[in-house]
Amino acid sequence: MTALLAAGAVVGPLAAGTAAVAAPGQPGPRYTAGAEGAGDPYFPASGNGGFDVQHYDLDLTFTPPGPAPAPLEGTLDATATITLTATQDLDRFQLDLRGLAATSVSVDGRPAAAVGQPEEGAAVEGAAFWQVSDDGARRWELVVQPRPKITKGQTVEVVVAYGGTTTRPEDVEEALYGWVTMRDGALVASEPDGSMTWFPVSDHPTDKATYSFEITVPEGKVAVANGLPVGEPVTTDGWTTWVWDAPDPMASYLATASVGDFEILPVAYSASGVPVLDYVDRDLSPTRRATTDASLALQPQMIDFFESLFGPFPFVSAGAIVDDDSVGYALETQTRAVYSGSAGQGTVAHETAHQWFGNSVSPERWQDIWLNEGWATYATWLWTEHRGGATTQAQFDTWYAPARTPSYWALPIGDPGPLGLFAGQVYNRGAGTLHALRLEVGDEAFFAGARLWLERYAGSAATAEDFQAVYEEASGQDLDGFFDAWLYGPVKPAL
Image 1 (tube, rainbow, N blue to C red):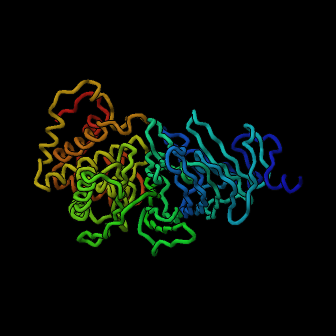
Image 2 (cartoon, rainbow, N blue to C red):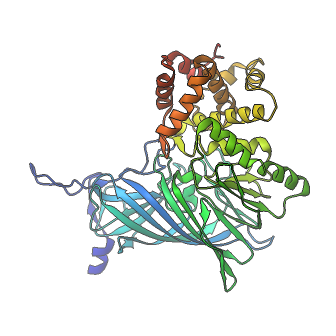
Image 3 (cartoon, rainbow, N blue to C red):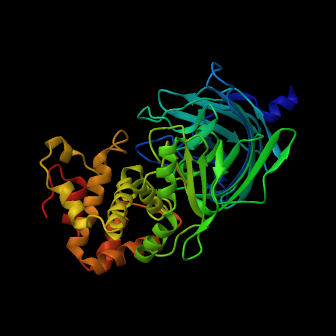
């Protein structure tokens, strides 16, 4: 009983947020709990406060479902080693984890005891961890109480063993996302907050980190993640382990570890030497495979073109994962975009442009998603013109000219709400906003502003206000009226 109490028993009341405090007048740490969210009003429980993750090392063993009519469920057995630095004196902290159970936790080698979720206001003695699951509030947390406590500026290594049954989770709009179990593996696409369905994480774009992956799957399956492969896959006793390293800062929703029956295509290179690694499902239909092959073959040229406009490609590699299964969308997973069913040229251009806009520079708040989708859509317009298709002006006119219902214009793309993140206006009015900005400030300032934006916030996150400030700097103009009308105005903006 004594050992259990020391390790993690619930022992009595504790006012929320209280902790050890230095004596009056004496300097010293004040230990409090890290916030359970990053402060994003759209997803209040996503991300975490009190620390900054430096690196995730994910060791995953995945068993796909059996053949039909077996349930469409897999099994994940995993260990996450998380290097994080405290940004405050921490009594305890939280990681997002949904649908999977943590079985052990240690901090700098010191194990914590598993306890049940304590009552509100109850204190827990000693090193402990517990989980909170509230589907209605979309709140899924792994709470870790380390002992000794962690002081501000201290870097620690947190090891979480976890696992369980994988299914087909849904986002706030009831669309598939996260670790989506497929009959032949898993399609992993996690925007906006689905990474917590497959590893314990600070699941918000403001907490970027580097990643490494060791993914073990049944022999014959291929596991694809971000970055570059490390060595050749190793097969032992019917299981193959694939190792990947992603050394560039990455938002959690951009991480992937997709598993399937993929063909590994020959590596291609952009003119600047960026390696392009493609993985295409062997079961694509002939028509979809022809479309996919033709589109993926253009990736080096797309990189060359976008580099000429926006500056160097921001990561160690590029490429694609094309699955014959579908989640109903493509996603710009960093360095290796995920495509459902097939990959068309326009979609490939869109996801390639995202590597600059959305991946290198991410939204500090999800309300600013137009900075991702507007830029990727506009870059696709630019690519179309570059290839001899319609000019960007013609594409803008095609979007801007038609009469539309008042409700179309009423959606403020600068704050579309959590159910409006992927509305068509976010993409097309976002692109239209950028073209109108180009007309407002001129080509020289427009492209200079794009490069300045990408240089200033590379590897981090920023807001629409930051974006406006960059363009006011690049152009020397006051753009308050412009951005108010185009991002927030409830009527069609005037040119």
